[in-house]
Image 1 (cartoon, rainbow, N blue to C red):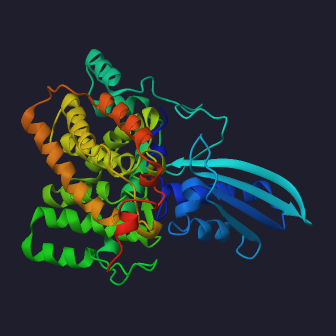
Image 2: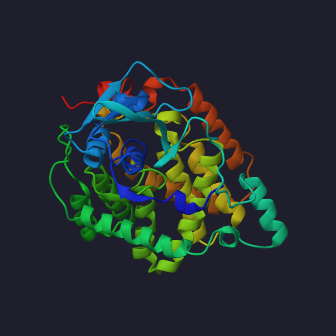
Image 3: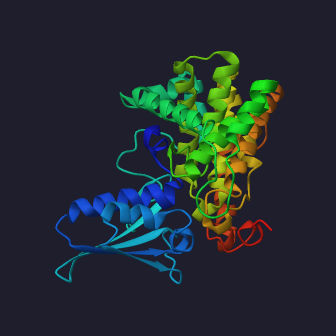
Amino acid sequence: MESIKKIYKIGYGPSSSHTMGPGYASEIFLKKNSNADHFEVELFGSLALTGKGHMTDVTIKKILGSTRTKIIFNKKITYSYHTNAMKFKAFFNDKQIDEWLIFSVGGGDLKEENEKRDGTTEDIYPHSHMNDILRYCDKEQITLLEYVERFEPSGTKEYLYQVLQTMKNAIERGITTTGILPGGLNVVRKAPTFYQKYLMSHKANELVYAYALAVSEENASGGIVVTAPTCGSSGIIPAILFSQKSENNLDDEKLINALMIGGLIANIVKTNASISGAEVGCQGEIGVACSMAAGMLVYLFGGDAQTIEYGAEIALEHHLGLTCDPVDGLVQIPCIERNAMSAVAAYNAAEYAMLAGSKHTVTLDSVIEVMRDTGIDLKEKYKETALGGLALRGKSR
């Protein structure tokens, strides 16, 4: 597995796979073809079907040049390697000088068709399954946090401090910004209202809702957020971290340690299944974020490695089969509310694990396998294509 820094990417929303990934690809292609006078980018699969709602075309044109870039939405071809395919072409004096097929595989990551999906040359961890990690920790008599610290390169905690600050900034912008989100659905920003209600009631859940909505609404508006593990699920982790900070006066070091625990959980899922909604549905985005958050909360509650695993398992298990069916292809309905609901669900999973103890029958590794298989079985219309589910029935009357 790679460094957990690859889980937490800082960038513009609303989508890690449909905005960040294409943006990174455009920057790479432009650097390689700086002499080109115009470009053509063909989008396939989910990128073609929901790219407009996710601002894929806007992002690519912003980098390559709006007047010299043609975007083609090819809704008829889907590649087997991954649905989020892009074919970049560069031209000079009307002659094609370069072509590049690249895939945005989730969480802002890019892969070429001949690359392995389950590992890279940057792997730094000796294990890729939680059961193996737990056995190693037991043998070495170390905690799960110490395991991550043992294998992460220098500079990881410093980077996670930037991640934490970015999350905090997104919350602060979100709870103070009012108005209508872009895209045409006329979704009203709710975070400021929820936050004001929390200030009057001081109910813990209301603060979690407010923070989750704040970041999710910032993401939907194209603001700067952190993939955790994706843009579409970026509200959950900040909500649980900063609500805990407020409730228990936690310092930044404790929150950064929690981010390391969550990053490890996401890494395991990413390596053995997927964090791409276009590949496995929203269970791979919101479900994984909830799993990360539950494990992080168990850590913050003082739970041991086995209980952290249990909390993460409960959260992911009860998101199995979750569809990705965004209305109008926008990361708004049901995405924003789903962040708020699943942030609270993470608390429930963590509290249940702490009450029940660490002994349980189904392991996190098993649930990850089931999530992968369920994602394969899900019909394409439920995997970020806006062709089924709420995407067809969710518009306001």
